[in-house]
Image 1: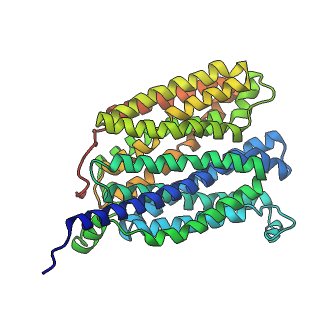
Image 2 (image 1 turned 90 degrees about the vertical axis):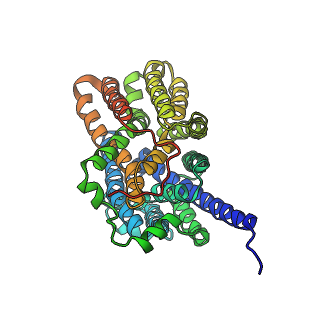
Image 3 (image 1 turned 30 degrees about the vertical axis):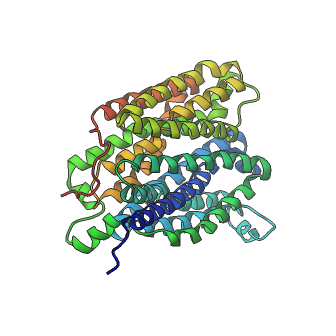
Length: 428
C-alpha cells in the first residue's frame, strides 16, 4: 500500500491558498480602480458633459450617492448569496456586473466610436443608472475575497494573507489616477471594464471554502445569510459597531478628498488641488498604511490596538489638512498622503468583521460591512452640505469629522478582540 505523503498534502493546501490570495488581490485591485475612478474623473467628466462647476458639484454628489446606495443594496444581495450559494458565486457575479457597467460608462454622451449608441440616451440619467449598477457589482468583491481567504488560511497566517489583498488592492486607486492623467475619463472607464472581464478567467482556478462546503453539506437546516442577524439584536449591534468604526475612512475620502475643490476654494487656494491627484496621493499613503497596519496587527496579536492607533492618526491627519492646507496645494496634498496612510486600517477592520461572526453569516457580514461603511458617506455628505450653509465648508469639515471620530472611538471600545479566533463555528 502506498501511503499518502503529508508533505504533498501541505503543498497542495499552500498552493490552493496562494492561488486564492492572488486572485482575490487582483480582484480587489480592479475593484478599487473602478470604485475610486468616479472620484478621479467626476469633475472632468461632468464638465465634458456640459455642466458648470456649481451644477457639477450637486450632480457629482448625487452620482456618488447613487453609486454608494447601489453598494449598500449589493452588499446585502451579494452577502446573502455568498452564504447561500458560496463565496465563488459572488466573485464571478460581481465582477461581471461592475465591469460591464464601467465599460458602458465610457460611452455616456458619446457621439462617435464603438459606444456611440450610448449617445442616444440622456447622459446624466445614464451616468446615474450606470453608477448605481456599478455600485451593486462593486459591493461583492472585497467581502467575498476576504471571507474566502480567511476561511482557507491558517489562524496564524490569516492576517498576512488578507494584508496582501489590501496592499495589492489599493494600488488600483493610484493606477486609476495615473491612467486618467494619460488617457482621459472615457478611456479610464473602458480600461477598468476590460481589466475586470479579463480577470474572470483566473477565477476558474480558485476552489470553494472548505468551511462553507462542510456547512452546506452537513448542516443544511441551519439558517444562513441575513436572517440570523435580523433575529438577533446582539449580532445586529455588533455589525453596527464595526461599520461605525470604519466611518472616518469614508469621511476622509468623500469630504476632504472628494470635495477638495470646494474646501480648497474656501481656503483661498488657487489653483485648487485636483481630486484625481489627491486620490492618487491618498492611496499612495494607503499602500504603506495597509501593510503597516496588517503587520502591526500580527506583531501585537491584536486587531483593536492597531485600529485604535490608526484611527487616532487619521484624526490628526485630517486636522493637518485643514490647518496646513491653506498654505498651498502642495501642503494640502502632503497632508493627504499622511491621511491616506493612517486611514488604511480598512483591511484590518474587514478582517475583524469576518472573525467576529460565524460561518453561516460570515459572507453576509464581511460583504455588507465595507459597503455600509462606504454608504455612510451618504449621510455624511448630506450633513456636510446642510452644515456648510451656515458655517462654511471648513467649519462643516471640522464638525462632521469630529462626530465621525468620536462615534468610531466609542464603537471600537465596545467591540471584542477577535485576533486568532477559530472560524469554524456558527451563529445560532
